[in-house]
Length: 115
Length: 112
Image 1 (cartoon, chains in turn red, yellow):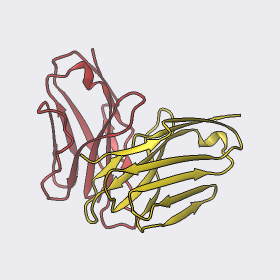
Image 2 (cartoon, rainbow over the protein chains, first blue to last red):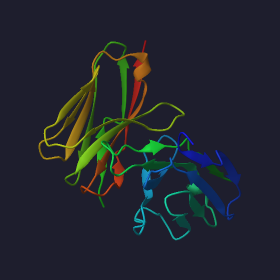
Image 3 (cartoon, each protein chain N blue to C red):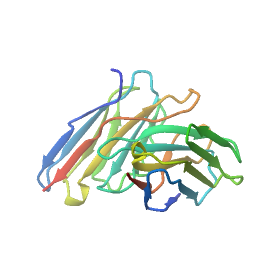
């Protein structure tokens, strides 16, 4: 596709349920990022995938959070046993790592609401 | 861990006034990027600075990277209502790694 695609765009779930968020990066982008943005707040780094290297998981807030990426394509962020504080917009971004600017291209985000 | 702070957190200006946001890192950065996020939207890339002391201009926007590569600023001359949004800086620690830590953001409102 032309841009980074995220699904679902909105997800309402009950506390304790598991959720899965999907990100389709721009074709050819080797780097993929997940960020969390709470209402009115900044972007909190969660995880970063770079090609076939081991992902940088240093931003994952707890072991309830995990993410996978298949090669240089789709990524899935999974949140187990959701809590109300997990409510936020989850933003995915991708980038080239050999381009002139290394700019991050963001998707529209997945808005998660935990009741 | 690495922190990137921005000041001010909020800024209201009259249309036509200038605006500046400052970005400060606790550690030296390899490079810094700036993004703009419109209300309800996602961050959109504005520019990247790499060299110590670098200054870049985009029309009414001037970006600067500090000599020590620990701070940066974005200055907007003669703001317009289209400048409304939140401005984020994002820093990378090491060349060759592309893990970007975003600043806390400055929310700009422009009053017509």
